[in-house]
Length: 66
Image (cartoon, rainbow, N blue to C red; front, side, top):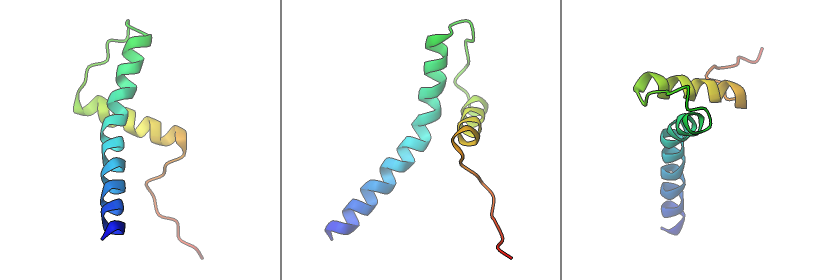
């Protein structure tokens, strides 16, 4: 039972980080560079998520071994 709780907690924390990460990134850019004035919308959240993913090496593709 203890392992299941840790698994659920771990997955929950990862989901929260994925959701709040881009929002924190947009907030930090707006704080550092007020002239940007990036709005908090679905489009800007997704754009930051994809930008951060490409910079950190996250890939949304499958690789076929052959």
